[in-house]
Image 1 (cartoon, rainbow, N blue to C red):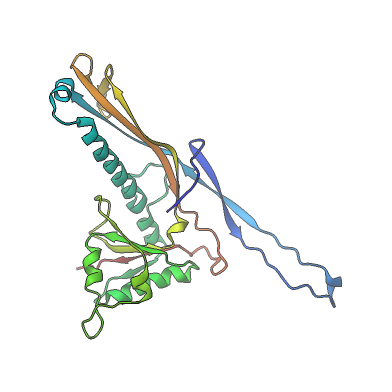
Image 2 (cartoon, rainbow, N blue to C red):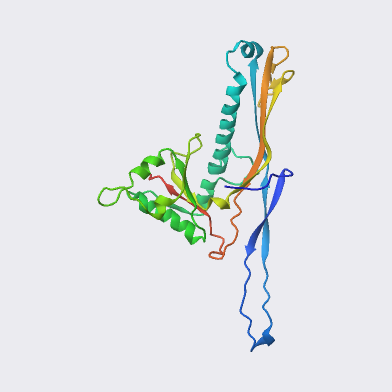
Length: 268
């Protein structure tokens, strides 16, 4: 995805190209050689910052008696969980913030930009790529789960040899290994990943609390009283947003264009 400059507020306006210019050669023998005039138009789209947060309480005695740095072990696990939550929301729309748009996989389904899995995986990928190319975009990469590796290893020609030195084989591949990939429904997503953009309002921050009262977010019941329970807690927060602008391009000015496509798993 394309990283935009950090957000300066909770909402950032994107100006999306909606109408392309029309140009013409200057005709000196007609219209007095006047140059043509054209219009361009833009539409607005917004990136909305959403907050991701968690609090991890822990007993002070455990911290004091541990032979290892507990917080040093906790921090990378939390950032890993953050990444999984973000990927799941962007890819699948799972538990996404209300003011975020639908996940990429959901938008692919709406745009009918997918190929059904067959016994020829190479042609399946070609079919998905054709969807993107018909929309006027170049495919810049392939995204899938770890099981996608095996599908590529078993992509063979008619003689049983691995298919090599092809456009599909040369595309960069990224494998989602944080639990955010939809193994049940998708083999892969491909497309012009530059078209998906994100921006950070506040990077991951850590703060240790030692005097707070922690309540259950659903029932408001007090779960921990840190001072009374001899506990401390690590509060982790982050704010970011993303969007898929899908601007008009010179190859396809229709509203049906879409920069991503997928190969859907065969329904048994």
